[in-house]
Length: 191
Image (cartoon, rainbow, N blue to C red; front, top):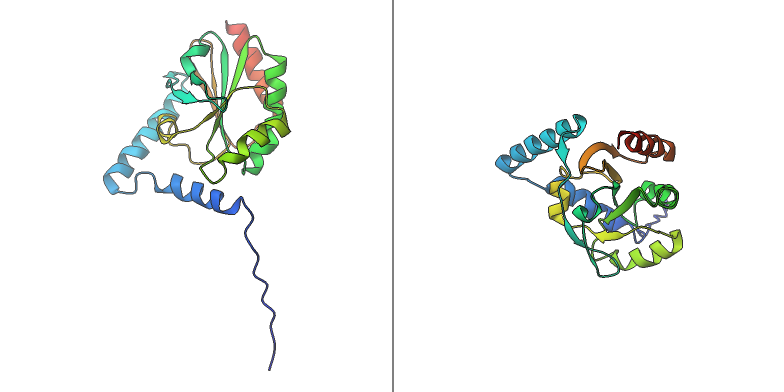
């Protein structure tokens, strides 16, 4: 008789939020009719983003300090809109670059973090912001803002919005700081 030892690993605190987010984003529009509409809308948004013809959807979201933030409050500035969560590894790796960009371009650029943390990890946001020295507003994301921005399906997803309020770039995944800086510089020359 052979004895096998089975080691059951206990999931860490990020496992369930990550699983929830994957299931939530994959479950949006599960019915056939809604799914066809969602795919059509997502394709239209992505095509328009690639053509730089999409006006960035405005939002009214609550920040971590309890203030209401509207995208339209930042008209005239270049906006980096970053969909992220505290449990997302690539998001965590990209935050120092966003902090640096906000510091370097503070008069011309505003970074806005849209946290997609849910109630299980929401308490991690403020300590995370303090630990990483986040110097830009972070707002709590809603299903509506996820839908408005083309059904965000992976994070980080980042949008660059020009000073006139049009989406000019969309990135999915970790982006090198140089890519952001080059785009910001080219947009500042256009102004």
